[in-house]
Length: 293
Length: 267
Image (tube, rainbow over all chains, first blue to last red; front, side, top):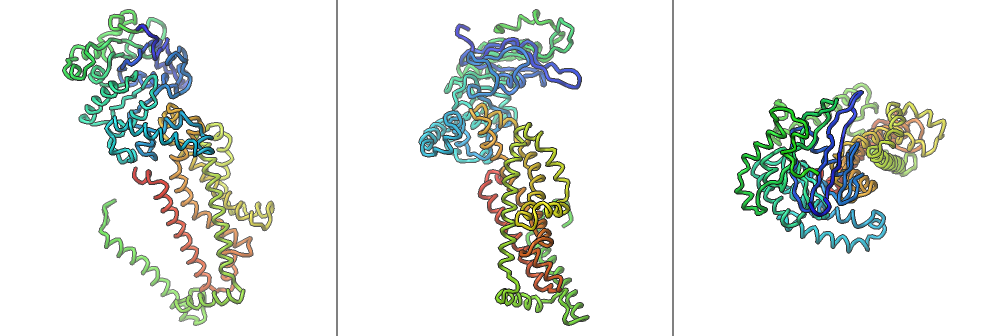
């Protein structure tokens, strides 16, 4: 990685108080993501994938370690990090178009200017609406712009949510199991849609999923987070850390991705991340870690 | 017909609804007939002719200036609307702020929880001593009766706004003020409207009770005066107008909900 990383996690640790003690969730997680890289983050349920995502988002800053996005330390959420949730999380009182244009409006105008200088912001609003229309057209929702989220299907809602995030042109787009709530057909359609979005908008994406095949299909690189490793210190449960990090060996064309056979890699990831035959210390897991800084 | 949550045909709904009203009317007419049989001048359970007589009498008294129905209507309506509007606005602002900002909640929840357990009518004597016989007395009773419960309910609704929406708003560049106003307030607006509708009954309750005790104009005052002289045929007209007013408010709120919260109905 020659240029500076878009996302740079340095020894991130996260824990939460529980009763008299603490629950350790993340242990010394270090990860660097390059520009326009699509990183799939996989791991067993409850290993802390979403916690790591929220540390980058800025809603749950780590207890120790540093999170840098585009060279700046993350303390709070901000428009340089877009987020797409599994449950869509669209604003239910806004139409698809208003949902997509909202970010531009919030980011580029202030509350007092919108309230007290409506004429000045009117022109901006029109410009934002046009940009939102353009993005919605690109994501195939031209005919559904003026519908409320409740009037859209699950797949359409997720397209709006992705459009809402990419219009902000964030440094990194965080996708928290975005396809988890969809049926298999819609899921496949959305997988293709995400790859098209990558071609169209070239965002850097951190994609959380529990589906290994999906991780390999969508990601340029798969990172495995797991609590199943042997800590050589006193604490038997130090939290999850990165136990797998490899570049996916396929060409970037959609056709190659469709044809690719990931059987061996799937097995390798399952063995290393989900069901290790025996718990290994981190230094012995090195053979599965190509890119970890 | 008696299967749990099994829909019934429209004609059954109409027949059952009509039957309930017809039975109530028949019961009333029977009581009125019996009272008339005992004493033809009885006005405690007036029959149909006595009610018509009451309406005529009311307009006559209105002309003569003995009973000013429209002044009563105006006084009660103003107190009701002002009380409901003010308590809804205060509860909406305070409830949303409490639901969003834990420090505001920590400050306001204890006194509001305490006040919500007090019976407003029992506080009437306290307000009577503190405020005296002024218009603010009625407003105070309404605010005291409505604001604590409505605020706590708005606060709970605000807390139920999915945290993902708040986080997403921040990631779209919203300031805390914008999150509160543009996201949380709009999300809980249907709850505020519903709360206001549900509160309109208690508001009227407190107001009529307070007017009965401490007013010299208004529906509560007039009902007390008329019932003392057993002019129930006029009292019933006041009661019907009250019920119609309540029904009208209900319909207005429903129309408002349909217009302003279309998104919630479609959810």
